[in-house]
Length: 109
Image (cartoon, rainbow, N blue to C red; front, side, top):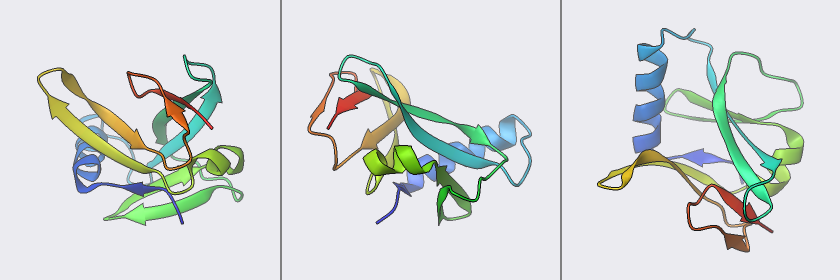
């Protein structure tokens, strides 16, 4: 398994990369850090450096990279992008999470 990214998220990532004039080699870096109301928080950012230990997947030209420790918690996760009346943002669907907070930004295993 790997970390996947929906077509809506691909479109949003490409839009941000174009708007911010980021280099073509820019990847979407996904990870976790300790904290949040459920124990772990998701991290998401852009990176043009890929470490040789990173897990890499690619969907429609967008490289998704993840460090090995975070990958233990994120393997099989899908990153999506949603727009609604309540706001817009990236959403994680993580099959490894036993519990998530109401905002969807943190989880526990």
